[in-house]
Length: 87
Image (cartoon, rainbow, N blue to C red; front, side):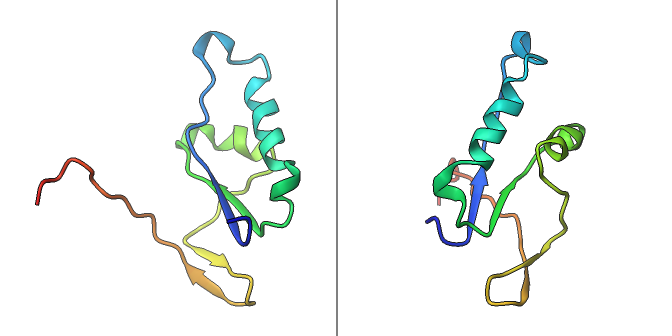
């Protein structure tokens, strides 16, 4: 909604192109996109082994507590929904 937060999903570089700088270029383009400059936070979830890569493009590891624009903090909870459940 370009108001508070933005999430990055499914960043994948083909195995035979890893190491060419494409992931860095993609993440920098997202991070620096003009329409996202007013957003308070840009977040993503990643595997533990990718933390150094994301740190190298400006991301930081954060816990479940996150600062909100009103000046407080709130706990964030990762949630999922199974789409194949029949009720």
